[in-house]
Length: 244
Image (tube, rainbow, N blue to C red; front, side):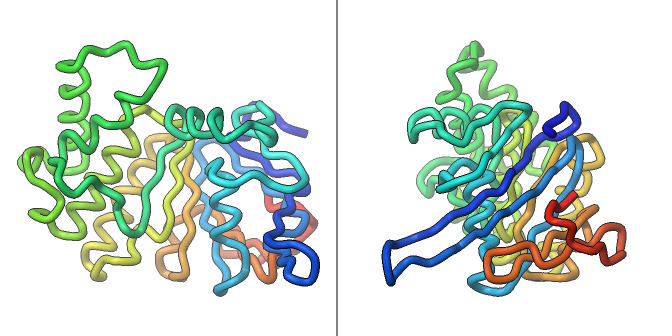
């Protein structure tokens, strides 16, 4: 049963691609409950379904069956337009490839989600002031006017994190956030993400790196589209059908 302590919940979620003999079962009966303020990592080999699960949780894909519940609301059947609005207003994304606008400086990259937020009532000056605060929060107060090609990989990811936080999302979704970074920059980014979680941010992170996954409070391992097992506080938990 969904409760107010759960920020996201999947109930018997299935996802397939293709049809007939070409059909691929990407996810099979996935049951996950993620509580407010929790930091959950999703791991698995290539083809295990981890990216598909992240895309469903992030409202980039719809399940073919089952339910996706965000903040107590069933959003399984939202159309593409409403999913796009929800993504911008309630979710924050951090991607491996940063996804910054190349000819736009750091400040304007961070402002962008506010412009498309229907609930935003801030003036342009107020939006820029908020973006400045976000960039200062991630340690880039002196890089606001720099374009992405003038920033290191770690700095670009910090801009992406500031952009993800600008709308005060219910949930932050991070897809291999350190995948393109050297080990030092990767640890700096994970320290920043850890601090965000410590301040109460709910986080779902896809990673292939066991060391990176240790930053989370719980690790959900997928194999062949199913939950194989869950690691919680360093202990193996028997899979009872739901990753809780």
